[in-house]
Image (cartoon, rainbow, N blue to C red; front, side, top):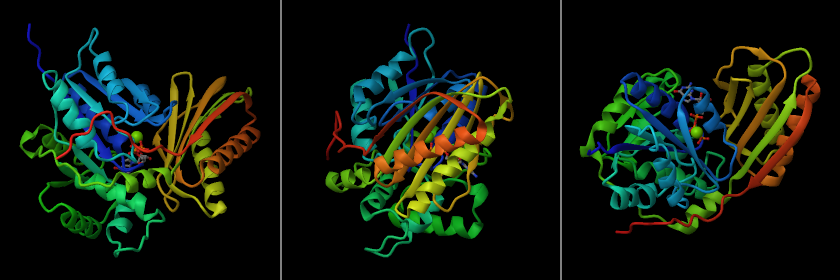
Length: 373
Ligand SMILES: Nc1nc2c(ncn2[C@@H]2O[C@H](COP(=O)(O)OP(=O)(O)OP(=O)(O)O)[C@@H](O)[C@H]2O)c(=O)[nH]1
Ligand SMILES: [Mg+2]
């Protein structure tokens, strides 16, 4: 029996751009169409809020952790194959690490060249994070206004340059003028790619994303002209902390949404008061039984958002996971995260069974495969 190829959809974009939210919304729509969906998440280290978030929405999620897709290409392939044992997906939705770029050369083309008989590679869509896009893309040469270094801004731009189609995200929060300005800036970077608008959170424009995914004619496979030294410096600027705390509530149930929002706000307060930190994405998950809350903060001056609402209180065991990506020293970031968790424990009368944390600066990207011009 011959099978249809698995459609492989990679959704790129900077940290906090809305990739996981979009992947969840796409998965819901494909599932409603009767398609089987597999999702692959990715991070430099383990214990991912995104994996839990998408699993708690009922999706089948595989995780590639320990390095980005390009440096863990064989694990990516094994994870995509892992879905195929008894229930072969029609669509695989994959979310790379938000500080990664050069994905056409290191992930899409190698997958197409080596496994093209099994996977049908969709056009590559990249979602623009408006809060940083507005500042980075309007920069005069040599001046940075985003709070990130020129090297981190370089990654942001390179991500946009390699797209087959670009998405302006969070349009529920943008004025028509904002959208027009961002379109103009994107047109300067890539005059030849379609630019669509989308709100992964409200679902507005997601049909347009599906049309782009199905429009094979836009898949131009643009190879970047990229300097890996600058790319590596930009990634190394980011402090990365994944912290997991296993806690018990007192007899009084705790409101999970309150827990996640408070913890994000407290970590952010420490980071901002420190005066050195620039938040790319702070996310906290609280999982009690089968109820989960995720709260997020995507910039120093943004508001804390509950991306996944639990809507109820629980008592007993709760797992807290913090994933923090902030331009600052990772050891300092870890101590801010630990302090915030401690003070939350006191405030909410939590008993700690364990707290483990892993902090790092991403190492130099060393792709398994890289297609060059
Ligand atoms: N208002 C609004 N918020 C959104 C939208 N899309 C995503 N968000 C919020 O933005 C935050 C980050 O979204 P994620 O989907 O986690 O972003 P991401 O790109 O996966 O982030 P990383 O995995 O860290 O790179 C969450 O609080 C989301 O709820 C949107 O269209 N509108
Ligand atoms: Mg994500």
